[in-house]
Amino acid sequence: QVQLVESGGGLVQPGGSLRLSCAASGSILRLDAMGWYRQAPGKERELVADITSGGSTNYADSVKGRFTISRDNAKNTVHVQMNSLKPEDTAVYYCYARILDRYYATNDYWGQGTQVTVSS
Image 1 (cartoon, helix red, strand yellow):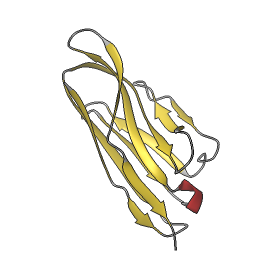
Image 2 (cartoon, rainbow, N blue to C red):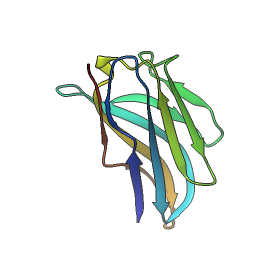
Image 3 (cartoon, helix red, strand yellow):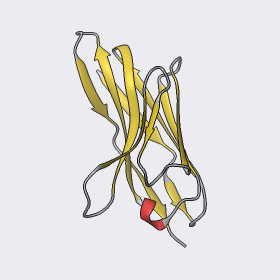
Image 4 (cartoon, helix red, strand yellow):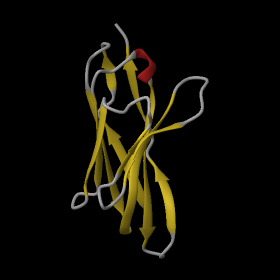
C-alpha cells in the first residue's frame, strides 16, 4: 500500500504565503515524478507544478515566479512554497506521485486534497 498525506492548507489573505507539504509512505521501490494539482469549484483539475527525481521542475504559467516546488528524496516528501497568493489560487490542492511499488508496477497515487482559500 502507498499513501500520500498532505498538510499546510488554510485561509490566507491576498498577497500572503502558504507552504504545502506531502509525504509518501508505504511499499515504495522508486519515487519518480511528484507534484501538485489543484481544482477550483466548477473547474477541471489542473497542474500546478511538478518535479522529477532529478530535480527538474515544471510550472503552470499562472504560478510561475510565485510558487516554488521542491522535494526531499531521502524523506519521500514534496513541498510547494506559494507566495503572492491571489484569490484565483483558491482551490483544493492535490499531491501526486508516480511510484514503482513492490509489485514492480508503476502507478500514479494521489493525496486526499487540502483546501487553500485566498480571501480578505
